[in-house]
Image: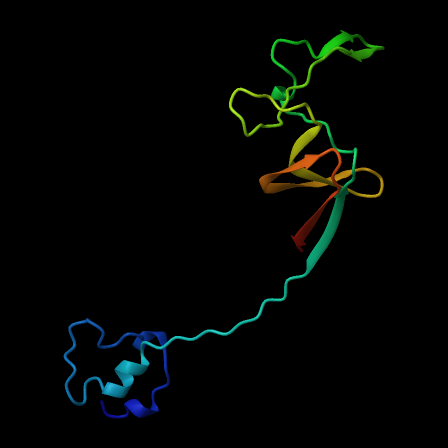
Amino acid sequence: RAGSANVSGSWLYFGAGALDGIRQQAGIVSASYSSASFDLSFKGTSDTQVLTMFTHAKKGEVSYSNNPTFISYGQTKTRLTSSLVYEENPSQLIYNTVSSSFLGYDADYENQVYISRVAIYDENRNLLGIATLSNPVLKKEDQDLTFKIKLDI
């Protein structure tokens, strides 16, 4: 078109000649304009501050579970409860989660727990948040574990 060289690019002209019924004849849509109309490129940067925290589960610690199947079936969890006393059943049996490679054989009991969530506290023991793991991690009593938690601020 006459004077089209002086027109700056605009979204109004984006995709001109691209299956819109306009025939590509000389003077209607130039070859250079139609090939350039499909090139989009973006550049951008995003600065995200990240808070990195480490939490440690030491040997002999973190061996309790809130999972109700942690205790063998058919037992009472509490022995005595009142406004002054809370006493758990001292003869309570814990379910053995240690697996054996052999059929029909139960491995010896060993303290272990699957960690699926990590609580984050401040210096005054106020709960700030809970980090949930994508896959539970097995922690045996004789192991030290360290979790790295990254939080985008």
